Length: 432
Ligand SMILES: *Cc1c(COP(=O)(O)O)cnc(C)c1O
Image 1 (cartoon, rainbow, N blue to C red):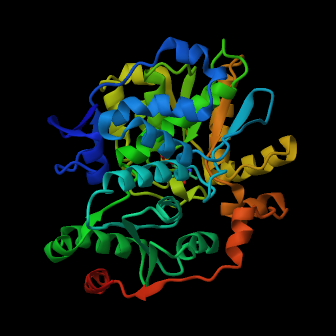
Image 2 (image 1 turned 90 degrees about the vertical axis):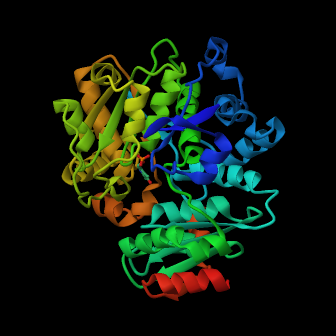
Image 3 (image 1 turned 60 degrees about the horizontal axis):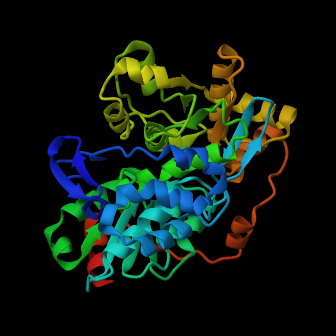
């Protein structure tokens, strides 16, 4: 399977090259040349196959011959070595919990898969690869945990001092080994500017093999299809497939779901659940796609004003607005509605959603009111404890700490403080 750049369909690269590069040199996103059709037998017999085997069958056409079967099997097994339970919340709504991974958010799957593929691809290089990434919070933890102890790869994470939550900071700074956290006395934008300058610097690129672990990387995007297959595997009424509601920001996760559906996975309908950042809901209403600066909300991992992956969704639908509208509905949910939903779901159904999951729940409920008889699933993309201040304010109850968090609390933060200047980052990278 080859991948082309959405800016220029004539440039083709392998899965290996697309993973190492992240983005095409013309700045386009990579897209698979064909979307595979899964055997009907696989869908019919989905109850009788293990999650590992299922995941391997889904991803293997995309990886092609760039990773041998036995290595791919190991990579997939390590990627999904935690549960993805489907939990019934109301008569018609279930939650697919994607927060049982090491950093308590769904990004763990993409980060774990990408780190292991990259580790495989650089195995025979005699020079280590340096993954450089700027984070505003969630991505850094998933990348740090995903790449921890992967041989041949050093990870350097830049984060804005004092601007990430305490849990997020501990997830970034307590691992050690091949993970280094640079604590920048500046903003997230400063961190991002310094990382960009590093990728463009000739001295650094001579001295080091630099790459990024950006969320548009195909090796982070494609394994997110697994969630939708795991949802269907656990769905009792196979004759009536679920409506699936996906809390969306950069639209990578839902784009993977639409890809899975195009490959043959039965899904009744998709809902893109957005917060106040409503570029896509407005587009589906009016047909006009207008990007805007992001506005801050309670579900901050979805505060995106120009979703990078939406262009991949358009490509799946051949840029046909009417066929897209048949499969996808989108709602914008306000912060007040998000808070009321956290309270309501907790008080009425004894289930505790995080702010992102609450957006997904309410969008689904809204759709089901118009389509009585349908049933659905919302993806619960983060553990509520990651946003405990917002959630506890609504319920008035303390959220018990999961083991992965309480275990972090006793650990010592290790970070290197730098000022927000590129020369400082360069000096660190050259001398380390
Ligand atoms: C990243 C993230 C999202 C948004 O996912 P996209 O693929 O960017 O649409 C939703 N919820 C949580 C908790 C996230 O961390």
